[in-house]
Image (cartoon, rainbow, N blue to C red; front, side, top):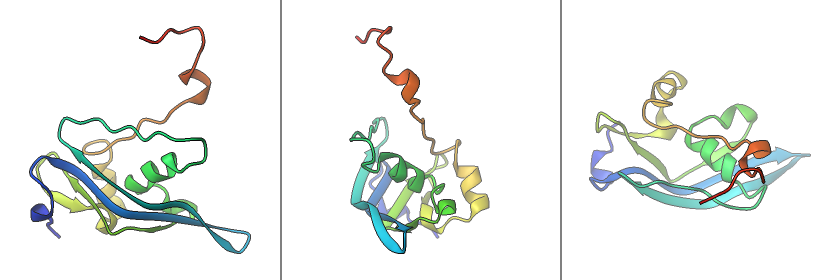
Length: 124
């Protein structure tokens, strides 16, 4: 289903109202509540926060990799403009379609905590 008229011409990613919850010991635990973001062509996005604040869960939801863990993902929209300029709703894509999108149009760099803040390396 095309969504090209719902993004500004420079937008490559638009997310609104992202909510992610997990079931733990019979209760629903909210991991992410009402996250919205917009990324324009040429911009870099960094999601920063304390340990356990939902950064990785948010990124995994955008990549559609969190659902296998039993997460309940609800979102107003997750629109991505692919390299071919087609705009897709990520939540509507099949697993096969997402495999084509990952790496080609959207990617995630995982942080390795054992090497990310090594005191041997200088910054700047």
